[in-house]
Image (spheres, rainbow, N blue to C red):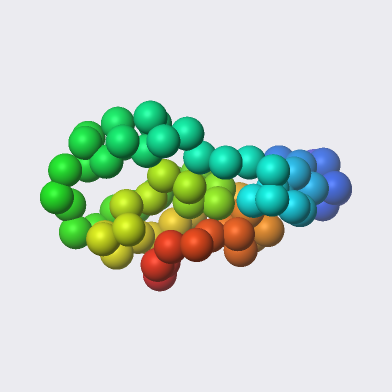
Length: 79
């Protein structure tokens, strides 16, 4: 059975993603914790990346997300 495009999870996040970066701000505490956990890695595979709010600035990031709208909001470097 096929799922209508509007019923797919990515459609929900596409709707949420419109204007998302205008209202959602990253939590600096989470950013710090994730940075500590990643240490000095050079590459990151971010699955469920959303807007990439917590991606390290000094690493090559490959971002994966069901919503292209969310991915389009990223500020960092991505492949």
